[in-house]
Length: 176
Image (cartoon, rainbow, N blue to C red; front, side, top):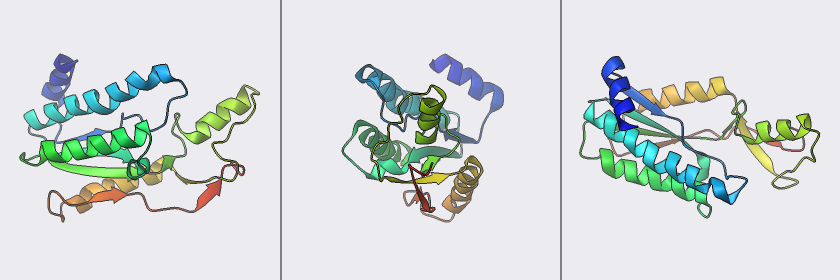
């Protein structure tokens, strides 16, 4: 809860906060929808409020490239959080940095992990689209991109810029 956040901030006194806990993938079941809303809105804004109250210099939102593809719950919730945080941080001294990543290869909630789980359990492999190409990024490349964006944000006006993951070469999911 908020008391836990206050305690963590009081003990560690962070200057930069990274919010990477947003749900970035559509759930398998409808009953999981409330967890998306909780993670993407309530948790993010509780963390943002505590960051601002604690005088953090930067709040880094790790979003997804899906945020610019409207039309589903995940994309719309990510975009709404981005817009809301821009409004929230605009009058504060905390600088918002938004980074949109493609799928991180080692992410346990990503498409590769889902395929791996289907293979391990000897289940039929279900692909979103048979000929779909997918951009993948290693976790090390993702970290470098996020840190580079944090450094570059200093040279931009506070309300400028969403850093979008460079389109690496895409891979057919059949190849994966």
